[in-house]
Length: 230
Length: 238
Image 1 (cartoon, rainbow over the protein chains, first blue to last red):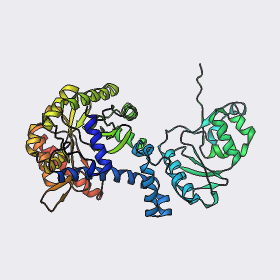
Image 2: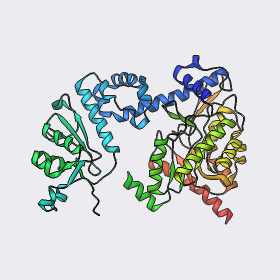
Image 3: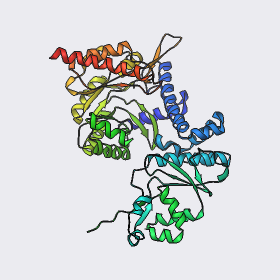
Image 4: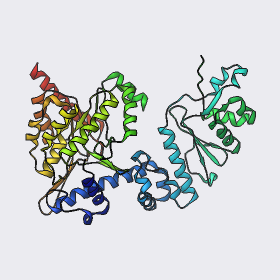
């Protein structure tokens, strides 16, 4: 391959005209620079639009200029530019100045992660209702792949849409089917999810806190662990 | 998304057009991206799979653009090996799209069509001919777009794209065309499609529009025009 040529081109895309060696491209210097500028603009534009699309609510909250100041700092990080476009907003939420903006951005990123997560059947109240009690308590459960948990700095000030329900300092983001749900949950439900991450049984969760377990099931935060029956 | 795509696939053959494999990366293509593509191909069994003669990453940095490659033997060796890697993983041949070029390398040793033919023969892949890309390269590099499409080996072509592009004209009289997929398909692009199809026969045609997307009626009018060109050729051969 031509790693040297590509390194030179990449350096010119990052550093501008002074980094473009005269022997790399054909055509007049003006034409070379216009072409490189067009490529650089495409790259820059794609990254910025990806961030704008990832954090629409946060951008509206902080304003266009502030958002792009934060985006600029985020894109200067070498770790950021190693991310594919669909993940380029990862870590950006922590860069906002206020708790309200950080909370909203973190929630938006969790929403996107839930949206892109693998599909899987969630444990539902109906499936539980169909089980005999002795079987019910033995059902092994894990968090649903689309389940995300966000620690809010200022939960009461979270700016989101009316589908947000519940109370507590944690925001549970779930997507049991096509719709994404936002639910504020407290310490007990959070602890139950931590238990489920290590794989546990529904019986254990119900013993710990039946009401919180019901909330997790209602919101589609859990899935049954499939067990092979031989 | 999967529900919609599954319903479409059940009704019609689908074509997967990747922009993320970065086969021109000297460190090798994006393996996680290939795995994701393989999962999709297993699930939907698309009729066609394609990506671009380009690179979009280097030394770990991801670059959201389709950057040009020098047309050299070294590039040919590397790219053919990467296409082979994709085809082995997917268990099927793929199509490689001709680039939309804003610049060329001093060390280019191949005419673009010759390079694509050599790649196809070496890797056993087919070609996706984007006639708008040919127009963009004509404006930026001075190639002859009609001579280009006349030189393409029709037996290698599996799919054709048409699109619009923007052109900036400068004080010195020069222009820069950008393949932005943000304007209607130009008359010259339709002429190129007609010229190519009348020589090689009908192929699946995609009208690409990513920016400044117009009304559904306007999009359908372009799809209808593409279909009319294909139908005309089908009628002529029959």
